[in-house]
Length: 341
Ligand SMILES: NC(=O)c1ccc[n+]([C@@H]2O[C@H](COP(=O)([O-])OP(=O)(O)OC[C@H]3O[C@@H](n4cnc5c(N)ncnc54)[C@H](OP(=O)(O)O)[C@@H]3O)[C@@H](O)[C@H]2O)c1
Image 1: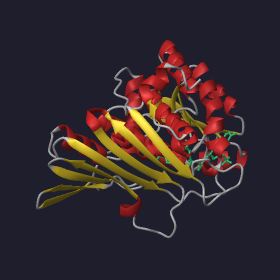
Image 2: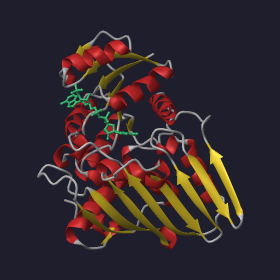
Image 3: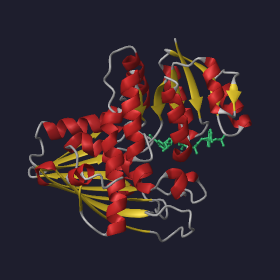
Image 4: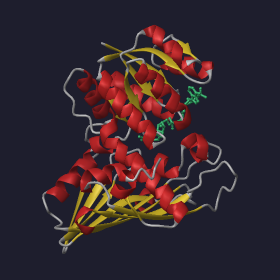
């Protein structure tokens, strides 16, 4: 049994703790959160009696693996502590708030031989695996263009809406929906240009890019337009506010990945329309934690290593810079010239 400790006691900590315990390969040894009562309440739900309001006290429990499920600004300090201390780490969301930070994580994790995984679960999800398989087997032919929509009604009072604490909407939201899975399908984008506005929450703390449209040029001349943001009035069907449509010269694939559910695909080729549902598929969060545990034992098939996710953070930073500068940015040139520093 591996010794698991958790920092954070919110929504995603619950989801991933359940996934870890489902493997029956870990023992929950302790929980730390900002508020001690919350930490205790969370720990007790999972039959654990040890809780702290100072995450560094978790070191007393001699953990093998740390699950970090906190707002991103505080995550930076916790991940630094976990990796410096030599613990394998699953970071619940984006891996870092900046390129410098993800670069530090990848260097130190490599040197210390630690498994570090970012929380993007799409690459473990059956609906995305099947989308990738359809594209790679050429069933819709050469890819032409992609449209994505990811509108999420974030609570203006929550940390998600705070620019400093979240590190911004492109990093928090767009890397997840859907830069990380699109890079898995298509490779890294070559050029990026983006516009953003702020119409709903205008306080000085709220996210700069509340709603953003980013155009990305992927290899092989594949055009992509991504619309994402925190303004989603009413309660539209998830199909209208959370999807990826991929046009090929021989057909169109629509991916409805679903945020909470298993998602579905619609494949249109001429007159034929084929739908595929994934209700019975394995749970992506469980697959991800199992993969992390296997990696700790030497069988490393992790999809979201610091090496891989470096580009997710880079694309988010370039989107923000393109918005500020109102310019198209060539990603490789931007990285080479150190324009991010
Ligand atoms: N993959 C996905 O599907 C997905 C979806 C949504 C979010 N995420 C990611 O999941 C992560 C967690 O998000 P969430 O929605 O679970 O957040 P959340 O529900 O707001 O929970 C955040 C937790 O962090 C704790 N916290 C805040 N400041 C802290 C500090 N200084 N020290 C220790 N704990 C502190 C809070 O503590 P108290 O409760 O004690 O105040 C709270 O329990 C984020 O990285 C987010 O981007 C992933």
